[in-house]
Each structure stands twice: as C-alpha cells, then as structure tokens.
Amino acid sequence: MSDYIPTVSVARQILLIRGQKVMIDMDLAELYGVETKALNQAVKRNKKRFPTDFMFQLTEEEKKNVVTNCDHLSRLKFSSTLPHVFTEHGALMLGNILTSPRAIEISLFIVRTFVQLREMHSAHKELAIKLEDLERKVGDHDEAIVNLIEAIRQLMQPLAQTKHRIGFESRHAE
Image (cartoon, rainbow, N blue to C red):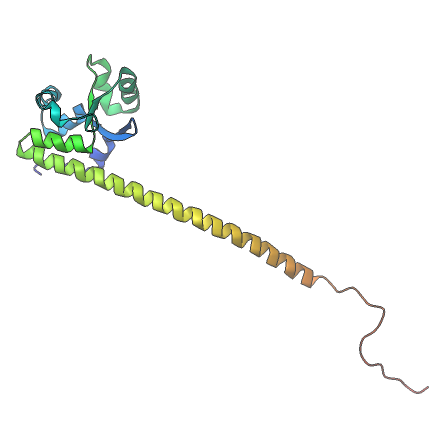
C-alpha cells in the first residue's frame, strides 16, 4: 500500500452495533480516499450488492451513542443524515465497486483486520476456558490439601497416655 495504515488504527474504527462488527461510512471513505458522499452515492448505484447483512443505516439513538463513545466521530453530531455502517462483507464489497487500486488494497487490508480481530477473540475464549478449568482443578486440589493438613495435624497430636505399660518389665529380686 502506498500509505501505511496500522492495523491497530483500523481495529479501533471497528464498532460493535446490533451485535455486528461494523465500520462507519465516514471512516471507510477516509480509508478508501474518497468523500463520504461519493462512497454513499456509489453504494446507492449498486444497492443490490449491499443487503442488510452487509450494510445498514444507524438509527438516531445509535448515532448518538456512536458520537458519545467515539471521539473521532464527533463530526457526526451535527450531521443531518444518519450514517451507514458496513460489515466485513460490506467493506469488501466497497472495494469491488470503488475500482481504484487503493480501494482494492484497502478492502483486503480491512478484511484482514476483521480476521485478526476474530482470531484474537477466539484466542481469548480459549484462554478463558483454560483458566476456568484450572480454577476447578485448583479448587479440587485445595480441598485435598486441606484434608492432608488435617490428617498431619491429627498425627502430630500426642497419643493419649495409657495406664498399662507396654513392653517387658524386668523383675529384680529384692
């Protein structure tokens, strides 16, 4: 790519809305090197390529939440239009309708970022499961250790003195 864009920067632009990881049209337009208006016009001309699982428009409430929680989107606060958001597949489709070499490179880059996030999420899930297993095992060991300590304490207590002596007595003649 001609301009280096760190994956972390793109990852920060991926938001969770309606249970889906998406990117706002404004962020995508900037990455693709086009105006937001031009991006949305290209989408409008290719409406059939963007079903609701590829792209949807935010509600007024969702827009307020995005503006409140994402500093870099504060410009949206005064926008009269509701922004569109694109899923991973929608971002890739944008690369297909925006035919510049930069658009192709960026769409692949964005998809790879989505994949990296999915892999990280999967790794975190696996780690959480392993930690739960470890906690269960340690919990079982704790009980066993407590029982072992109690048994050792019982062994350490002095034996009760018996009245009868055990062993041989030597008899001395008096």
